[in-house]
Image (cartoon, rainbow over all chains, first blue to last red; front, side, top):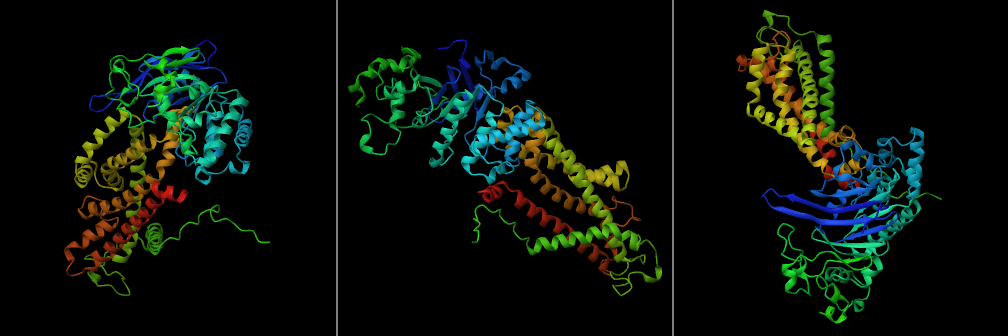
Length: 328
Length: 285
C-alpha cells in the first residue's frame, strides 16, 4: 500500500520493551502504513494499543527494533543524529496535553520561535514576523505573544502548540490525541482549525485518537490498531459504514449517541484488552470477540486486502457483510 | 460608565509576607550590615584588657567581656563577617559544583551511574569528620574551612538536583523541545535548568544555614578560622570554660547564630512554598 510519492512509509515496524522482570511488552508488532501528500490518516485504538509508540517512532523520538520509517524517502530509523536533526524539520508533532507540552517558563512568542531558531529559518527580524503570523493563523492575538502558557486557556494553549508544530512548514504532522485533553466545547474549534491549516499548507496528518467518533470529521483514511497490530484499514466512510473487523464494530458501538434508541443492535466492547506482555495465541482480539471460532485461537490473522484500498486482519472478514451474524 | 475588570483575568496579587518572613528578612539585613561594617567601625576586638576580665554586660561593654578582657559585643558584631562569608561562599561553591553534577547526572544515564556512586561514597563519611581531616591536611584558614564544609554538602545537593532533573526530563515539553530540533545543551540550559532553579535556590538557603552552623562547630572544636579573626564559633569556644562564671560570652553570639540560621531556614521554607510545582499549578489554574 505504498508508492514513491508518499510522505511517510512505515514498513514492518516492531518495537518491544523489556520490563524490569525480564518480560517483554509487545508495544508495536509488524505495523506498516503510508500517508500520501495532503492526506490525513487516523490511527484509532484503545489506550495502550501502541498508537503513541508508533507516533514516537515516526517522529524519530524512538527507534524501532526492526522495520523502517521512510520520511520523504529517507529512513529515519537508520539515520545519524545530525541527519535526524535535519529530518525533524519536515515532521512535527502536536501533543495531547497542551499544558504539559509547553515550557511553563517560556512565553508564547518564545515557544513558537524555538523551532525557527533551531533550524535557523530566516533572519532575526523575519523570525519575529513569522511568529506573529503563525500566532494570528491559529487565532491568537499579538498581545498574547508575551503571555505565559498558564495565562492562556486550554484551547489557546493547544492552538499555540499547533503554531509551534507548523513553524518549520513541515510536510507531516503527527497529532497525538490533540483534543482529548480539551473541553468538549472547544474540541470542534481546534479540529476545524487543524483541518483548515492542513488544507492551506497541504500538510499530511497522522491523527492519533482513541475516539473513533472524532476522527470521522477529519480523516481520509482510518487504521484501527489493537494490541500493537493494525487490524483494519481503509477509506474513512467505508470503514465507518461497513466495518470488516469485529473490533471496529465494537469501537463504533462505544460512541455515545444523542438518542439511545438510535444504537445499532450490535455488541459493544466488553472487558479490557489483554496484557501486551502475554498476548493471546492466534488472533489477539479473540478473547473479546463475539464472533471467535476455533481457527482464531491457533492462527494469527494476517492483514490482507478485502477490497481495493481496504484491509482487514480477521479470519471472518468475509462473513462481516452478512448482517445477521452481527446481531449477537 | 465604569469598566468592570474580571477577577479571573487580572493577575493574582502576590500574598503578603507573613510576620515570620518579615522578621527573618530584618534579622538577615542586620547581620549582613554587621558583616560589612562591623570590623570597619569596631575593629576585630582583639585588644586585651586584663583589668576588664569576665565583666558582665554593662554600658561600656554591652555583651560583657571574656577571659582576656575583650569586648564580646565587638567580637560578635565583627564575627558576623566570618560567618556570612562562609555561609555565602559555601552556598555558591556547593550550588555550582553540586548543581552542575546533578543536572548532568539527571540527564545522562551513564554520568548518573558514576556520579551517584561517588556521591554514595562521600555521603557515607560523617561530614564533620571529613571537615576536620581536610583542615588538618590543608591547615586552618577561611578558604580551607569553606572547602571542608562544601565537600560533604556537594553530594547532597547533586542528589537533589538529579532527582529534580529526572522528573523534569520526562515531561512532555522536553519531548516537544527535542522534536522541534533543540540541541541537548539548549534543552539543559534553557528548559531544564530554568525549571529546576526554584528548587536550587531553596537548597541554597539550607546549605547556607548549614554552613554557618558547621563553621561555628569547626571553630568551636578549634579547627576553624584562627582565633585572632573572630567568628561566632570561636567566640563561643573561648567562653566554654567560663560558662558558669560568664554565660554572656556564649549566650550572645549563640543567640545571634540561632536567629541567623532560623531566619535563613524560614526564608528557604517560604521559597520552597513559592516554587512547589503543585502550588504553582494551583496558582495557574
